Amino acid sequence: MAKCLIENSLLLIPELTIAETLGTIRKMKTTRIELWRILEHKFCVDLKNDFSNKDVIGWLNHFAPNKKINIYQHGKGKTTKIYTGNLLNSILNGRIPAKLMATIYFRKLAKQNYNHSEIELLGIQKNTENESITKVHIRFLRFNTSGEMYESAVGIYELIENNGNWYIVEMSIYDDNESALPSVDLSKMWFPEKENSA
Image (cartoon, rainbow, N blue to C red; front, side, top):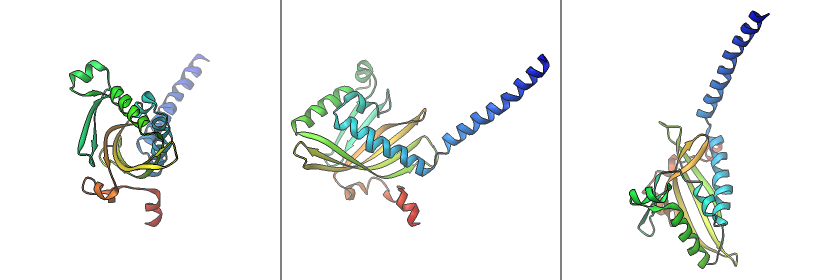
């Protein structure tokens, strides 16, 4: 009886290992449409809501933790260098603490009578050599308390995946699509309609 129980338990081990392996393979081989849905929800729902609510912690949770992150504002010719870790490490890295930057920025938006944003995912570009890196092409619109749209821009964001979550590691903001063209080959960006028209 004991021998039978041991043999049966040994038989279960390979099955669990195979199931776990298949699960890992599925995670690694995320299709473009699956990635699109994940990132569309991240940007067009979660990040939009956190930004619209001027939620400093919520918004910063979309950025990779303990990382040096550059925000390039091409229309203004400005680069903001932030660090998403603690204050001491921000100082040691010669960067603005991300929490301080976000707090100042949201105060500035409040003075503009900012009410909310709308975000549209325009394209994604998977890294062919590293599944855990991708770029997204977005458009965002900002509205004031009167419901008027007062600012429009596009962004190319680089993201990394960690434990199933995608985090921003770099942002490039442009006034319009035309100015974004010299920086990134948008023809490599994928969107669902592109596959349907192929």
